[in-house]
Length: 125
Image (cartoon, rainbow, N blue to C red; front, side):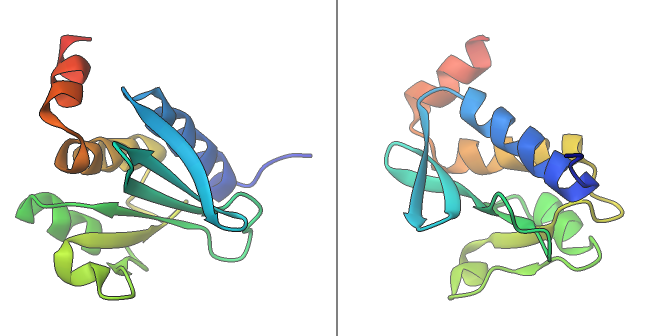
């Protein structure tokens, strides 16, 4: 089975997120995956099999990065009030959001959520 571009991007983002210090993957809503650090979510991955409209959600505090993410076609502030706190939902495979950029945003979200000792461990790599 060949993965679509969005599902390939999701796999790359997932692999990257799980490579960061102290991270774990959990499934709090059946098939929907999240990656946590220090028991706090820093990226919502959605369902692995979501071929309809796969997207990730990340917390972006830096105004410039946040604005750039929202400029991606189809990107929106994350639902359930999370958008008010800097969370952005970005479609996977969207024009203007290659997987490498999504990984940069995942790292930005990680740095916002992770304890300083884990961010220092990341910087020491």
